[in-house]
Length: 259
Ligand code: SAM
Image (cartoon, rainbow, N blue to C red; front, side, top):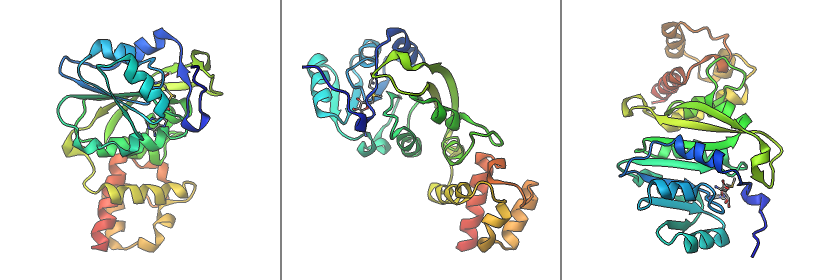
């Protein structure tokens, strides 16, 4: 039976083999790699992924009808009908590659969550709408830089690999898409206190046009003043001036003050 795309699940299916191949080629699949695909849909990417790693492939698909059809088509695949946000990302070990043409309505939420929860992976390749791809890869000081970029880049190096036009999907989305590569940072570079970091990022970027000194007014004290001086930063700067690493330092100093 013909599947009707569900807008609520962000279903825009890829119909172009070349784009699928380019996405799969961007992974670094070794013989022993486990591939986790988020939202396999009708299996446009799955076919190529299963060719690359036939024995170690898990697909997470929320739509029960699509999950069942994929499982029937590829009995060797482990297809789990579930919300990818509920997957135990923390438990993955060994060589892991994560890939997905993500549902656009929750793409940034999924990435925010996954990069911080997954402890072990070699590479992730995600397709998202281009505007989100630009936010994921923007550097401090750039227009698209915000909480999402600073958060994700605290855990992984990101690179926009290529842009994808609406014409390669059915149904066609209204906007361009982008494919982004994530390479995890070493454990020693990851934020010591992710909860504090996320709170500081949300606080600062809620008011991104305000100066940092103003945003942090209620927390201001000698310690914070000293941190700005040590970093060579002025409190008159706006949040977008701080690098992900500086946000981690700021979060750590604020936590220290509250202890
Ligand atoms: N990979 C397919 C392709 O490229 O043609 C489908 C991509 S489509 C943009 C997104 C897919 O994610 C859909 O199949 C949708 O049902 C699924 N999906 C939506 N929300 C999900 C969630 N929370 N967890 C897992 N899958 C989800």
